[in-house]
Length: 165
Image (cartoon, rainbow, N blue to C red; front, side):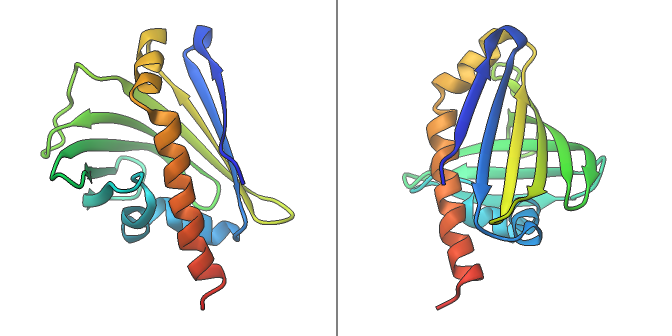
């Protein structure tokens, strides 16, 4: 399975589509459970560490991506809307460990949709930005490669849960 990116710079958007060979309930959990997210969200050799998670409309997820050299990059996602097993939307931004926004880095507006397929689950992520420059900055930061690697991590995690040894 491959992560597919479709960029629309003039509308300041990127669409990310990925299918997973696992049931919807398992994919939803992987995207919304702090322990699951910590196992796959960061591209290897980086690790995700959740500090806080309140999964509901008006809640947030505060986490760091930790590099093998001890580097920590903090992010916060504020949940704007949530429909269990179907979709959620959030505003995501880089911040410090207290969740204070870094105004020098782009804010991302995420809409994530989940749907059953004949062989598993499809996830469609629509990312939008305030400016075309912010979209370009995220791309230059390696978002596409990093997110594809994280999806590979999720595939590995799902293989253990769907087909345990």
